[in-house]
Length: 294
Image 1 (cartoon, one colour):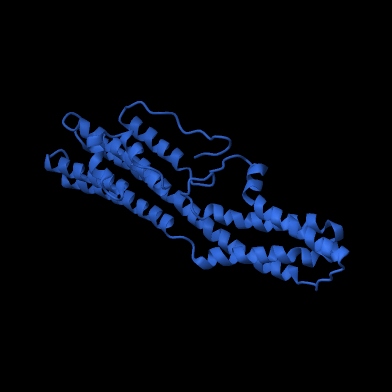
Image 2 (cartoon, rainbow, N blue to C red; image 1 turned 90 degrees about the vertical axis):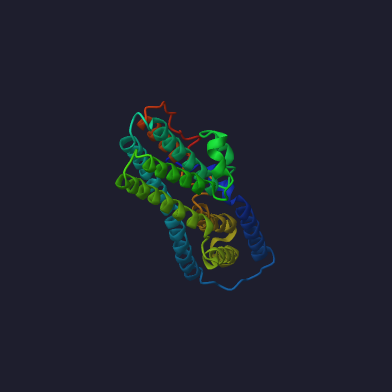
């Protein structure tokens, strides 16, 4: 996630420079044709075209932002539920008999959120899990197709085992199970966003119409702008291409790009809070790198 006050101009240009160069060359061709070849193009209702296109792109960007914001809300719920699970493990489980289990639940939850982060970003999961858990502890989950869910299931089994041992009663187990249901629901929402793209109409037609509009733009402006057509048309095209790119950037909040929801930073927040809740030393918060918080 870009946390700098304003995005770097070089980053903006890097994302749209290819179509922008093509657009500028096309603008020059149209301008030269108009003056050198005396090619007279018919007037075009660019204002009407531009208004309709702006509305269409606006709807698309709003839909993309809603997906991005929902991803952020779900991770906020994950942070809260992780804190609750740690607090319940600390307060419900007896200090003497279940000291190791209290710590195991906390460490497994830290491993879980990092596994989920890697799954959503399509990154290798095993290494992150083994940073927190031993091979024997992690092996049952690592053999499953959904490793994060396997870790959560393992935590649930350990809580049930604590109930069987008499360390917690059924009411306390129900309370902890309810917290894990909240965690599972948040994971399900994230996976829905990741695995369900925007409808094809929202992806295809705004891109097609924007490119058509950029092609028609110099034809409609050359009579008014004259030799300044390449500059004016390219700048106007840049605005539409940049707004179109915004939708592409936000549509997948877990794509491992600079526009992501900052999953690494939020996983570190969970790690810090949970380790401190059991009195263990915690790492430093994740800091932005060149204006980007990962």
